[in-house]
Image 1 (tube, rainbow, N blue to C red):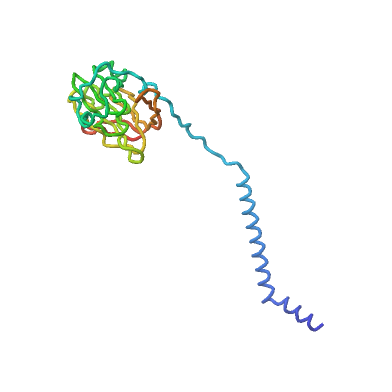
Image 2: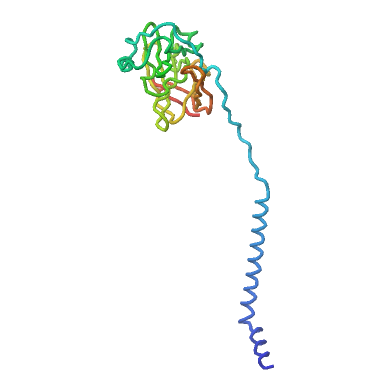
Length: 249
């Protein structure tokens, strides 16, 4: 009986009751918090995610950017007048007669300017034949070379320039940029920008306006032929003090 009274006094003493009550309340609060969190997590996990639909990406073949036509030229180019081809000619391992060249002049270019653009089927080097003179468009860059070709008066001179895209290098070292040939001055310049590890295509949207697109190059079914597939729009070409600049979109 005496021991029972001692435990009764201990359990009812303030120094014991208050901490026990506090600990109990804390335990109850912790249990409630954990239960709420678990229920919240379960609710979030069970509900299906809600997505906001974005624009559907497109990749449309550009019909007027098809360079897969097997159009041979009808004459043997004068390699003595073709700058930068001398090493290939001297080597003697590459042929340069008519059947090794393809006419890649776009119809809209042919309709407006009396010129011929030819591409070597094996080497990929591209030349402009204008007023009986040959102009190298890509400096024999030992890569894909000239890709896309349009006419647009970027300089605002009243007469369109030949605007084209060029690829140089291979794999992760590949760069693609824009070239411009001015028929008035017969000067060739290149853009102050380049795209790495991807190709570029062009789309004329006005007399003095041309847009630049990221592009996919697909091998064609003809010897040396190919076509370009339109991708992301990158910007619009502009005159940059006689060079080709681009206003980013």
